[in-house]
Length: 364
Image (cartoon, rainbow, N blue to C red):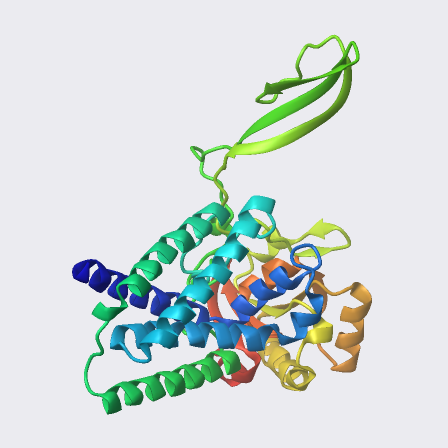
């Protein structure tokens, strides 16, 4: 039992620290995930949406802190029961997402590790088993080092997390796990390999045959049935390959200009997923940046999921020497964790990406 508890302690402790760190590296991304959970279509807790960032920061810092406390053996009773309650809560969310197919990725490990809904639930259940082992064998969870050292490490962990969170919120994630990182080519990210796995679907056809409902299952073909068609249910039984970038368009008036724009030798993208939620104080400096970029031969475009009317209003209000294109909001949130944010590209390859607080770092 002693060795099992020792292994569980190390496994749970480091996993909680890793899980918390990858989300703390990108708290804005985890905020988007919580907003998805709070939405009307999932948990219908929309009144919590304005507080999503606060919840995100609390959860990830508490997650890291619990991992550190467990490894140190500090505040044992509080730590073990907090771990238990947290994993039960996460287990409920992941089960709900998986069973009702509400959220396709729980965001448990940010963008570093993508798990299916059932994979996320399985992970939580495995952790739950190890945490129960720790609770049952808590007498073997002995403290490490002296009490002052443990307190010091705990305080340093809290301070370090707070400083790190402040940095990534004011700038961009230190580590970019998304398919829009610097050096990545967007065109290549959209390519579907010739030997890619195709999705396999199962179709459950319902017919009324002589007053009796009959269900016939096929993999696509319409069944030959002498009866009245009622309904069909489609289930994906084998997930097909999905390229890293699969929802990227740059549209105006219903036409996608992405293929042409991604061939530009010098392209600057001004990204704002929602102009009404963007930081207006950034736009005067952004207007100056646009002028400098154009002087250096860059083609400059704006990209937003806002309406054409809202985009035109922003262009006029801040005297922006560019026009805006429409791109899906989720894609824009993925591209850059800043509203607005700026990217430069060379024939589809991202060369620079900055937060609006770091516009002076752009090199033309």
